[in-house]
Image 1 (cartoon, rainbow, N blue to C red):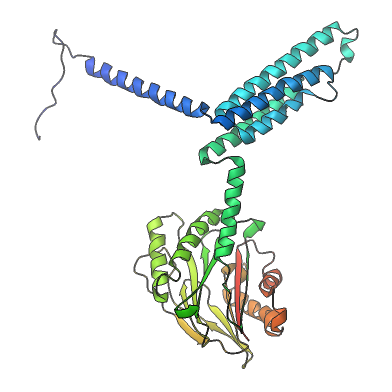
Image 2: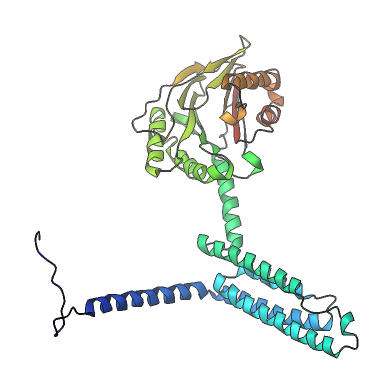
Length: 403
């Protein structure tokens, strides 16, 4: 209520009471104790497999210590990095710390034993066995690196083998989703995608599906997420799944608006993307290209022997709501070739995109247009190798031709 004053707590002697402050301090300490207890339990909590792995590795340590005492030339003190490394791959951080304590005890035991042998030796200056500061430093450094690895595994919540398997599975799903479905006789496609720096994940991706009555329409979306390589790979991974779900579920002209709305809802700091949507009638050869800030399509007319640039209009995806996308139409006749690509195929530092497109179309003439259909398999890969092999950017190209 406005104008009301908060009553102050006073004791019997009229002085301000300390009870509220004490109560707040006691509550804060209680919360801190609960949080610390919960964190500690979570840190050292492990399942049965974790403790079995710890027990096995902990037994390896005294075995290595014994070998070091008996045959020090074959089992140096640095051999203790073996269980430490294995623990970094297998154990949770809490049980890994316990293994480190066992390994430290092993180092101390080796040091004590070899120190006694050195004192008892007739020539102490010639005694070469023992735990040197360098050996202890190596084991400690490996332990610190292993703990960082274990902390990372704990943060992402997957075991080391499961994480690698999951990434491999995701990569394969992207490839399968971007595979063009089997087409009727007379139609051929070739695709290639090469991430920047030889990495496994790319900011460029493609999704394809046959839609319409009887699957007579081929729809392909070639997209380029802002960034490159692994930086854009996570966003491309999410978008490829979303685009694959939208493709064929909506009318062709509703796909890019829906994709634009999806990107806007993600609210990414670097969340824009370009995309080109091909809608091809496999019966008549008529097609429409719908673009969201993407490079134009390139159509080679077999009869005229030259290329036409098919440029559709539309803004980038994820920039503003209510974007409109205007398509460009054409017809693929017998012998014609339609080529779509991302900017990594045509960008040349310090030069115009048009120059890069001319170079790409010229190379495509040499590799595709003058090659028999039977020899065109792998033409997309050869295009990347001849035009953009050394470009440090994600590159993708799609070729569609009609016999």
